[in-house]
Length: 284
Image (cartoon, one colour):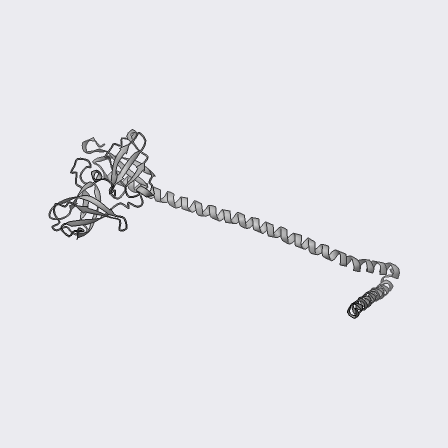
């Protein structure tokens, strides 16, 4: 109770002092300006209490303005984030188009160099993870002159042959395919004292290397020797570039040799290709 009494007494004294100050200022201001003291006192009291009432309103107004500015900033940030995402997406598209353009130019140069072959350009339209190393589908078929067993090349070398063909698309068996013995690719190693023939029998996906066995010889086979199709079997024409020799090793049982080949084409990244439609005298 004594504490509350002191608070009341302090409040009363504060009010009295405030009123006294208002009366004093009004008296001296009134004498200086000629405004009646009563009118000046009334105005000062009204202004004093008006400031007390308007203060919360001003604070509320300032808070509202701050919230409005915050929401505007949030919306602007959202717009900028979307813009950055769009720029990133556009950059990816540009890089993809540049890569495709580069490959198409390289294929065009290859096409001009293949004077003994008639070719048609195609793009890969399907390649699934489960059959990534064995097959893909291109967007050219019978209507473009593509036939079963037509060789398929990219700008650097052979990647496979057509195994199934429809009017507008073709399934391509890759040289890295290991699913069927009937789809093996006969090749030969050149650049040595003798030509060595063999069959591509397996593929090391970790090293991106083809394995050649059933060799006719391994004498004088050197690293860097060129590997191309042999033409044996009558399916693929002779002389299509496959890659280079990386090494010669013993097979798993140690009774025969295997030649490891670095394919010229990047078999993990194929997007545009050439399909050979005619060979030799029929090519124009």
